[in-house]
Length: 264
Ligand code: DGL
Image (cartoon, rainbow, N blue to C red; front, side, top):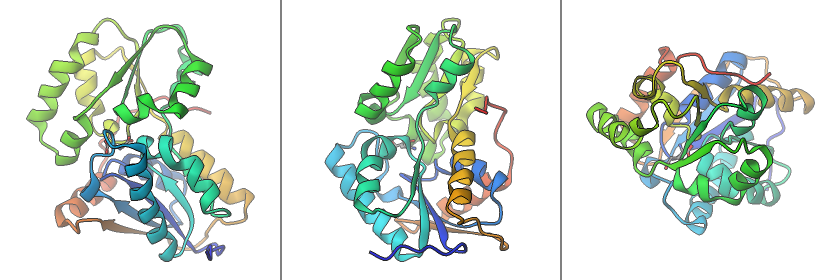
């Protein structure tokens, strides 16, 4: 396998749909001069309830495609895929570097250990070995784990009423019970405001994307791979859906995000 080691090589970013835009958005804030190719796998959405083998196969196809597109590095902008394939992919596609998102549970340990914490993620992430190791290491013993089956798909479709219904049925019961919320799926920062409306404004949100962006910059710097050109963003959807592309660029260009805690 031939890995692109040129500074102007692309950075591949992928997720089960457009959720990973919440990761890319943080990345381009500090690395605007890179060439990105974002792969939205709407055909296989959602990943959250799929088996490990299914996810491995799906991600293999995406990674091979991104390598063919001349990527110098790949960002797994999906917590579920990261939990299940990051380790395997690093070994299989060595020396291609992978940067993988994970639920920001360590940040709770670092910044707000004493507060009861709600971890929202897909079932696949919550059941994964990777997440359970993280939980064991940084457990604050006041943590509710909530597999949000069906939430990422509703965000992907973008139906506001359906999302609100989901939050009323599954999230509202935590009002007054938690002070921290870990957004453990890259789709969830897109509805942070609705979650806040549901749980109250004293709740603090934790999102791993800003930390990932800094880590990515460090890795590029260490490997002498930082690009100094104009920068570009290419969008690919596995079903070639025009509306996905439009939503993706709309989100990238407007500030849908409220402030979240960043790790230093
Ligand atoms: N956005 C993904 C994550 O971070 C996956 C959501 C899904 O496809 O179930 O886990």
